[in-house]
Image 1: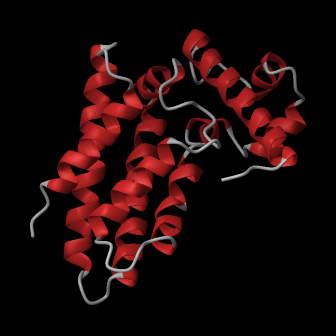
Image 2: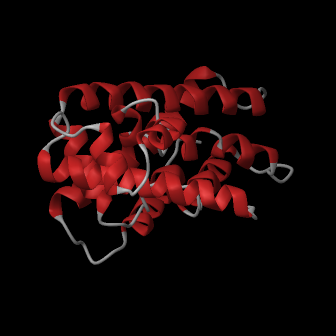
Length: 200
């Protein structure tokens, strides 16, 4: 996907704000960090921060936008007869390669964000809602695209197994530290394994 210069600038600004925020949250605590401090650390104004994020909480979950539309795009591009599991796997791969991440999937701030979500109650609650919303969105998209092959339960089995496997494997890797395998590769391997093992 070719990204124009204007979009590239927006992505750089978004990334600078997200990186500054996560580093400050890690150093001095989520609640103790202000928007003004985040903007100053990114060498931007508070007004610019609010152009990109309505709140501190939104910074932590900025990358949900990468995942939100990726399955719809993969479904639009699917080949005739391509099964749902293969489309899902391709969507995961495309998401991992997206240039729009505010926190690079294999970068040093991924564990920081994971620790924040695990330790800050409001972020933990938000994460559960985000996961449920993504799973519901992906299931609905699969049912709409494969009305003769999948009902709601079948789609929920596929998407639930995929998201659960990715969360479990990524979470364990982040808790264990360096595994010798880049996190994006590990996520893709988990996705491929669970989708290959799907019920026929």
